Image (cartoon, rainbow, N blue to C red):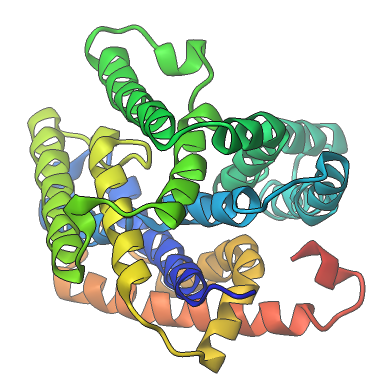
Length: 338
């Protein structure tokens, strides 16, 4: 049975992830010397902050669709996910590696794919593979735990996700790498959080107004802390906009609970959400072409022109990605890779 608010969440998250990749090119290029164009850098960070919920929402939806089931045939689950995710990761990993590293040998491309370096946005698929492998343990945990036990797990996870980057940055102990928490364990919290918020309500987010206020407050704080620390050190600070950071966690909860409380009507628009895998995989190909058309010098770029680039980029990249994904989903063999 379709859950409409999840369809709309997936739709908005797919738009948001495209938006982030369009927006963040400016902050990435200017990141090492933000004073070369502080106005554009600040604008990029400020807009980007509104969309940080995108990837966590994908993890949450995956968690819901798997963990809400009464029982799970682990063997069938792993085989189906191998076909659904592992094979596409390998194929598209090679495709991106070949396209953007044309001087590499086949062995170097293979190394890229095995290490998750096919291209930067594919990290999400590698993370979700890790979570799928952990599903047998996660499933047993949520099905055999009381509400308070799941809450305790989530609280501990949020504390760890918040403190580990701080300790790594300010105390020079790279716990994230040592404990290998970045790509699987760090996002397992969102996987479980999706199931928890699907089953239970939170008093702090039990109205659309409260969820909206919390979304705006968390977004404002993300902008403030990111800009303040970035300006102070003269380079981009990623800590406060990281997907596992507590402010992004609150923003994500706000968006999820807001959508959960809206009574959506069935619409053909939601059919686009079924293309999210193709949109996610393919949009970087489209975006790279779009960026080459503009040939921007970010150091001299005016804010007004940057905003035009962002708006047109999001619209163009998303629409073209949807169209190509739709056509490829009608194509034998390739449809199984999206």
